[in-house]
Amino acid sequence: MQGATVVEDVVVIGAGLSGLTAARQLHQRGYRVRVVDKSRGLGGRLAARRRGSTVIDHGCRYLTPFIDESFSPIAQLLAAGVLQLWQPDAFTLGAEGALTAAHPKTLYRATEGMSSVAKALAGDLTIQRSWRATALTPWARGWRITGERTTSDNQAEPQALEAKAIVLAIPAP
Image 1: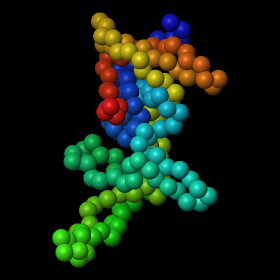
Image 2: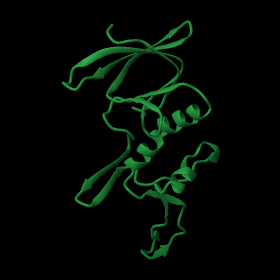
Image 3: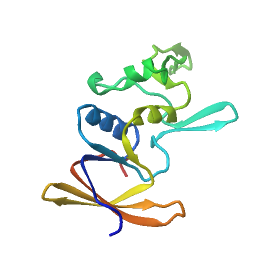
């Protein structure tokens, strides 16, 4: 297998909201963390497209408060101006066809599109993009993650990582 083997404390597979949040928490606690993701970009379902000066979020359109605030990056994202409180007008359609104003939930929207949340969470993390994990194998000191890095000429280059622990932050099939 080509490519050097890298040993980390933790390898996080998936650079979406869950993977980046987990990686940040671990990194802040002093662990050597590497995030790998099969895509070129960051954020998974935190996706935004631009049409001229308009930002169009698709996939995840807003965030809600985390159940456990100790894991939540929302306060830091609010302070950095990446997120802002959002209270859209909401209505409930009754059985007789009458609209009633609904009590708004606490929601947050990204000021520059949801992909900006992923970029802010990535911060100083070590991230390998275009790296697809293909196999996980237990070994004496943890795990061996076999994968492929897509090169600039669209060739798959086999690589391996080794880690004491793995976080799988991938979408359910």
